[in-house]
Image 1 (spheres, helix red, strand yellow):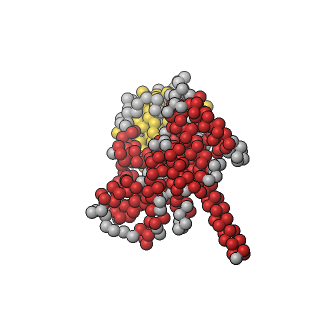
Image 2 (image 1 turned 60 degrees about the vertical axis):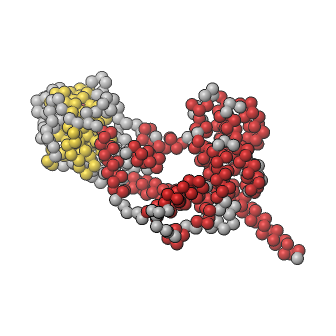
Image 3 (image 1 turned 90 degrees about the horizontal axis):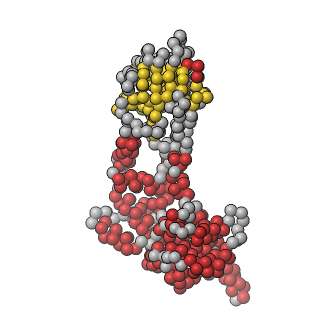
Length: 476
């Protein structure tokens, strides 16, 4: 008897320890999301952080053959050209940004000069600066005197019309289709496949080659003659149409959406969704087809819905009382990451309603004890500091830490508690299922595939952002 009781005690102790470890791991995952909540915008602004060309590079140019104006946006060929190596070539000060859908710039031909041997295109960093773009490898150029397109060879290909004085000509890179495109006076001239070896940094480049040729360049400091926004919208529409051609049985998409609503405890929405889909969606056994066990996310559905609603309403004390009544094991360790996030959220809610003195009192009692619980770069300390920083601003919503007052931060805390409750299910087979729904895991795989494709293209093209895609779909 004693031996059996001892073994049972050890078994129960082991289960409790395993739950505590799982509880802490799950909560730390969400704590990290809360700590870097503002970084989502930063990641999605990576295109804006990537420097774009603003002017011409007067240092790396064939300066003996051209004159660049003080604003570094105009060039003029002033001498008499004697042979083919007397080209006046100048690149932009920065390479074309790559982490976006496309890049574009324009030139205005103020004077075609004696022969109109003007060119616009793209060249790499090591390009010979006394050659026309397209005459050397790793370069591409659309030439005004003959309308030909040159791509690394001395012989050009038939491409478009010539251009001369008064014309506006543009050059761009479509990273989605891996093509160069060129325009004349606001209309597309044509596109050409980007050579595979041209995956490095490419510089917008212009060239002049006969006396009195003069060109102004526009890197976006003023409105383009070509409607770049419309062209970009059309490119996104092409991508959307390609996606929509992929056949997906309605019951599969239904099952994914339903699993999402179940996972996060959106019981009322789930009931409405089931009612609306009842007559249009054929029955499906998700478990057999995709390894999905609905019982895992049906667990404690009503309780999870109730607690989520309380947290999303800012009623943190009520949510904690429900947890103590229904799932005391989640909040029994008052220094756990889950409790920490709930205490932080209560502090934030007090700031939201202007109860500053009460917020300070709550912080001294409940948040102070979390300082110094971990090593350097402690997520506890970091989030506490951001919460306390709300006190320093007259309008905290407009402050650098104002994201803490957004609904999305409440959702992080609600998602944490939801995962904790799911983890108490003794029949839960997949621990990772506590953190994310099947729909979200599918989207993570989609993101990984998009990043892999971008990597295969030398880091060119925009990153995949789900909310931007959804916003784009609403607009169209």
